[in-house]
Image 1: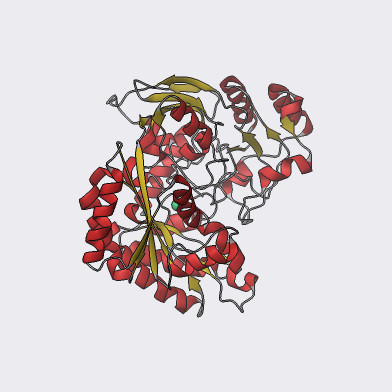
Image 2: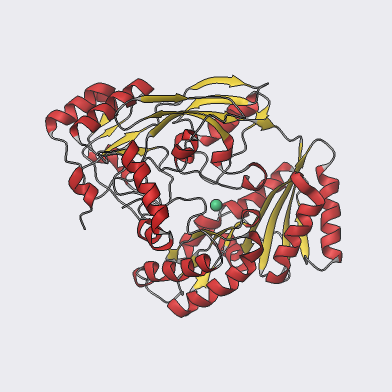
Length: 479
Ligand code: ZN
């Protein structure tokens, strides 16, 4: 299928490839297929792309020169960070026309203002490196997700990533106070402001956060830093049934307030996938239980553990929980975290898996889980839903593993049909078809199906204004 933007951008010829390469230097212009390979495959294998050239600029100025040339010549450019995205937004299309601009060499920490609570870093710094830089300055950069060792600041901002600390600190959007962005025509917008309040017209920063490389390329960001909690108390809790999930969350919020920093849930069947397929993991509690919650309370020294104990006693008295494992050391806490973090990886061991990253109002998660399970059985009898995710954010990773005897490909062929059915339930409950992964290539058609014409037209006019030639990440997010 050829989209409009395929026709608008063209294939760079040898002369043009040489001009792009000259901007970054031959060592950082990759044309060799083997060297390109890791940049062209998404880790779930849903998307494999082709490109004549991958460029790895070192400075904002090089990015600006690359985009000015691409814009003048009508060449599509796909920005890429750590290549951990889950919707194919960072992978060039199979047409092989687009060049890939990898930000991974731009990894400087430009400045840290510990007292003011901000830090300015370049887009290619990994999330884990940013966390360490903040910790070294005695502060916390809270954005945290399973792929943080590879995921970059630029990528997480371009996709407005979420993760496991959103409950207390918000998504990537809430953690950035300023951006430096290279525009489609090569101009640089220096919006690296460290302000908490800035009420001077349209919020350009928020326009670029979550734009998935379609409006500009983020080259640096001023991040917000927070006090480092002195104590964390962690528990893995068993719930007797779905009915207790919401009341237990409400009780946790009421008891711990802002100190409740993590409230993650997963199905019992998913935990058994984890202990079956991930070496070194074991069930922390005896018996077969339908739902589990990983819970963390963060505070100044001496407060988190008593708060957690009080909460668990109250919950047990009220019949909201049936059992709990409380970590008594950092090692034990890490073991409990591992069970949650391995949830995606463990599904690979059970054959094909159809994934949905959706959100609904928190109070409607239980209703969503019941209704979604019914539509899944209608589309594929015997399929195994293994929901998990960020309960406190209303964000469910509604993943569905294939029936054991079914062929993997036959199951995966049902992806579109199943996604539509699950998304219809989401929309009927006032939810969103992408909570934290973005749209990319995976949900582009679904976006048009579930959004109003007015909303799509507004997005298209913004795209047209900022990227009139359509060179930035063509065919992603919007058709
Ligand atoms: Zn998630």
